[in-house]
Length: 161
Image (tube, rainbow, N blue to C red; front, side, top):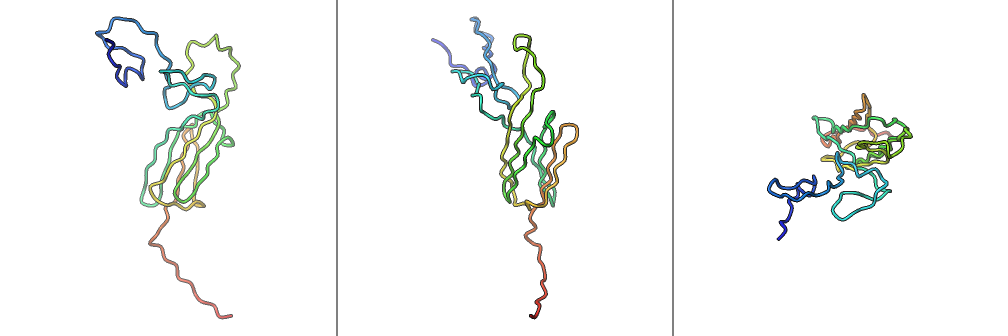
């Protein structure tokens, strides 16, 4: 009777030490990307269709006045990034272009992700969509979103017409 493999064994393609039979290593997707875009979905592999976008890994944290999002976009030109911001959500889209023309047969390993990527993040608090600062330094994109100040009041003087 064949033992059911654990999630980790299925994910990594490994086998238990007590198992003696050899299994072919399975292709897996690592680092949050979804293959190189040229593969089809197979039974036990994490391989996706050609038109899929990779999901961008992000860090989201807050200060007393801002929500800050950081993500690695090394190799992406600022013109190839698109930020869409609403009061409670942000979408980051982009494309990493591969400029090399190397024959697939010449690769020993190919793990870098090339192609489209995106990420939509629900924000923990409302922000001002017009009050955004986005900077990139050494491949690290930092987005600072100004929180909505619900305690802020404004006095308006009434004019007579």
